[in-house]
Image (cartoon, rainbow, N blue to C red; front, side, top):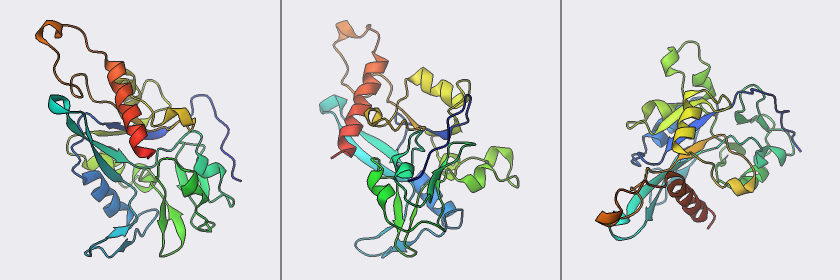
Length: 249
């Protein structure tokens, strides 16, 4: 089985922060990801029966939508999902060939297609459903955080970010070093009480989700109670627990 790199103090952990409060479910992230990666590091990303009744294929980003709440407190929550580049990725430790691996220098989880045997153990081990099997070539593929963009010196510095981040029309997606507590993304997570998806599993995802702001997930309280400060942490925890339950069904 494949070993993980030894943790180091101050280790860089590149990842995404996704704001569930403002994601509008436009699918721009999924589309931009598909467009870039179909000719990028893990190319091609095949499609099958794209104009038929049941199209399917390889997508590194998928956006789910859920209805939450009742009456005045009801809303649609859009939940973008891709590889979370976990600190303790089960997909890596179950790989019998070393094809799935975690980079020591930045924490990105990748697949070496040259030695992947398509056994699908990694997809069975991943509780987030983030692995994609390419039936054309019989290997597993996944989000790379657009490694061929973020380190591309031929691009302007402001363009060296994942395609899903650069295209988001409402800035619901952010990219940076979550191993640095002083980075913009780490500060954003601390201020908004961002959290992990399914933290009880112990895989410690690097990617974080920011919960909806107070008052967005519940009906307005009676007038006499509206001066009470909202419980931001409780609101965020309730949402993430709710999403966990939906994804575990």
